[in-house]
Structures are given as C-alpha cells and as structure tokens.
Image 1: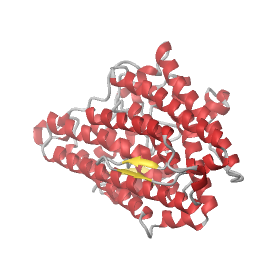
Image 2: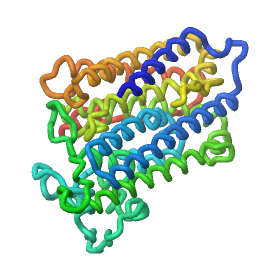
Image 3: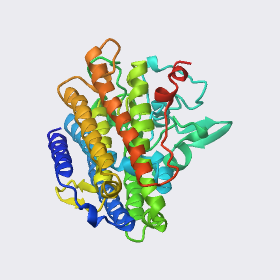
Amino acid sequence: MSSILRVAGRAASVSFLALAAPAFAQSDTPSQEAVLKNYADIALATYEDALTRAKALEEANKALTENASAETLQAARDAWKASRPAYQQSEAFRFGNPIVDDWEGRVNAWPLDEGLIDYVDAGYGTESDSNPLYVANVIANEEITLGGETIDVTTITPELLQDKLQEAGGVEANVATGYHAIEFLLWGQDLNGTEAGAGDRPATDFATGEACTHGHCDRRGAYLNAASELLVSDLEEMVGNWQEDGAARKALLDDPTAGISAILTGMGSLSYGELAGERMKLGLLLHDPEEEHDCFSDNTHVSHYYDVVGIENVYTGSYERIDGSTVEGPSVSDLVEAKAPEVDKELKSDLQDTLTAMRAVYDAAEGGEAYDQQIGEGNADGNARVQKAIDGLIAQTRTIERAVAALDLGDVTIEGSDSLDNVDAVFQ
C-alpha cells in the first residue's frame, strides 16, 4: 500500500497549491471550449492510467492461474488494489456524460450477488425472491436455467460474461463483470462482519490437480482471466471515446454550455447521491458491511478517497498521472471565479475540507480499522469519522449548486439518495 499512500499525499499537496495560485486571473477568463478541452484531456489521461493498471492486473491474474501460490495470489491482489485509484478518479466523469453512464455498469457495478459466480458460505442462503440466479454458481456448472431457458456456460469467455450473465434476467445484482467480480474471485467473501479481516480465499482455489480446493479450479481461473480481459477491452473502449475524434469528446464539445453543465452535474451527483448517499450513509445507517464498496478486499477507504480527489481534479482542471506528470489547464474554477469569486473560494475550501475528512477515514483504515469496522454499530468514533466525510460531501454539493447558479447554467439535476432525502424508506 506504500505507493497508494505516496500518491495520496501528492494529491493533497496539489490541492493546497490550487487554492493558493489560481491558474488564471479574472481578466483572463478562459472560454468554455478551452475548459472543456482540458476536461476531456484529463478524462483521457485518467482512463489511460486506469487501462495501464488494468493491463498489469490482467497479467498478474494470468500468472496466478498459471502457477497458483500464496505469492502469485498476493501479487494479483496488489495489482487489483493498484488499479483502483486511477479508475475511481474517473468516476467524476459519470452522471453528466451519457456515454460514460451507459458504459460504467460494465466495469464498476456493485453490490453483487456473488453466488452467481462461485461457491459461497452456507450463511449466504440458498435462494432470493428477487434473483433466480442467486446461487447459480457458474464456475461449478456447465449450464444454468433462467426463466425456463437453459444457458450454456460450458466455456467461460468474455462474451459469455458480458452478453449472457451481466445483469441476467434484468437483475442489477447479477454482476458478472468488472472490478468487483474480479475482487470477489481474488479475495472470496469477507465473512468477518464488522470485525477485523477481509476475504481470505486460498491460492489453491486456482491450483491444478489434487491441490485444487473447492473444485473447478480450471473454470475459476478461466472466469478470472475472462473477466480481466473484458475489463481491459472495456477500458480501451472508453479511452477511445475521449481521444481527439472520440464520441465522448465530440458530444461534450457540441454544446459548450451543456458541457459545462455536465461537469457540474458529475461533481454534484457523485458527491451527493452516489458517494455521500448510496456508498456511505446507507451503510452507516444500517451498520452493514455488505454496503461497503470494496467489500471483499476491505479497500473501500481507498476508493472513497479517490472519488473525492477526482471531483477536485475536474473542478480545478488538474490531474496527476501515475507516472508523476500533470495534465492541467483552464477549469470550471476559473469560470466560477470570474463570475462569483466568493463561491469559487468557498467551493475550493469545501473540497479541501472533504479531502481532509475523507483522509481521516483513509488513515484510520491504513492504521488497522477497516472501513467496515468504522461503520459498525457501537463504534462511536468510527461512525463520527465517516459522518464527517459525509457532511463534507453534502456541504460541497450545496456550494456546487451555488456555482451552477453563478454560471447561469439553468437546470442541472443532481442525483439524490433515500439515505439522505427519505431515511424512513431505508428501513421499510
């Protein structure tokens, strides 16, 4: 985790520099087109970095399936963790860009009913009223049945995962692809509740011959490799969408005012409904480790932190790449500063406050108190720490709304969450 800590420290230092030295004086306000070009360049760089890390993950997973050992399993887990910061920063491009929204579920959908994929503990249960494939266990079976139709799963391929299994039967919890399917295969279920410990799948689950544990090790390896290959190809697709002639870049630049609205929509919706609400407040209300984002690996603190970094990236128009170089240029912050400098100052301060609060959650997890422990019932200090980060996200959303008004962008819809807006519904 040392590399993640080093990057996190650099991200925090960039934030303070951004507060101290705006890129443009008020008289040099950039055009909307210049802001959007830099935003698209940052999107491209972020997805390129996510792709680089996904390719390294694919290679590590291949090494695991070719020679299963404690060492190759740990290397694959390390590669998975290393793949998360860049991708999580890219989530700030969601919600306002339809091409990203239509694609995102293929790579980062959660939560998932892991019984679709592989064996599960008896405590998981044997059926679900909402999901006929709750314990289908594709790895252990060569065919499964859905709605009276038999699906041949003899050969596990990327096409099978994407076309036949992902959200099979219209059930969103049938997540067969992406980071979290791979995470489950590498760690297995986390059976520790809100006590210490992550998933603990043995390396022998990928072994050959008599060393194989839990059966079907060849199919488990085939699934892992197919999911890894698909993740790489999906990220290659998104990189293409942000290149100079890419569909996402073109769509953004077709209507510059709508493009600026898209940036603030993404910032606000990720801050409020998605991160503060669905990913954090819901789990805190229920004290439920099943509601944590990276629930198998106990890596949730990293994913949450880099979501916040990504929001700041798109507002300040600056992104630090995995090679240490920086992509930066005209930003929405410059536009807001020209119209309402007090709002720009407040929003940058809010973003920094949220980063600080989320960093406290991050540091506690790195110190041994995992995110699922922090949201556990009876953990007053951990609960308060998480709530402070939620409060920061809510506060910055309110200031994002003021930025929208300052730029006179008209209607910008920021997604909500029952866990924030209708708490009674959570417990029904």
